[in-house]
Image 1 (cartoon, rainbow, N blue to C red):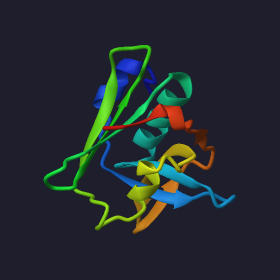
Image 2: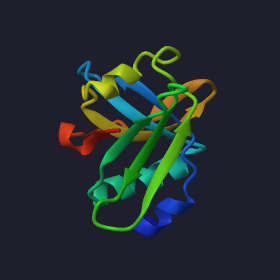
Image 3: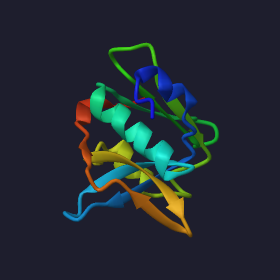
Image 4: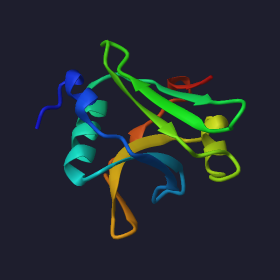
Length: 128
């Protein structure tokens, strides 16, 4: 398992989910194809400073998300078909109300994710 910043470019970020944790705080879950990739990304995030950049296409309303590792030249991105109308929890990102980030994957229609939530400071969320 390679958790170096460079290895982030080999991961396949597939989707997002915004759920609440056990304390009813909104969290962003980055979804990957399987537990191994989710674990790799989680380890990268715990060992590197990062930002979460949220871009909304004004004409379509779709969103792109990027996570640059701030002390390296590496990062990962997701072109999402999600809009505020199709996925209302995105409003929590726009309002900088998402308080944590973690990684997970879908298994039999259920989102499974690392319960150790990485705090997400409002200054780390950049809206474009």
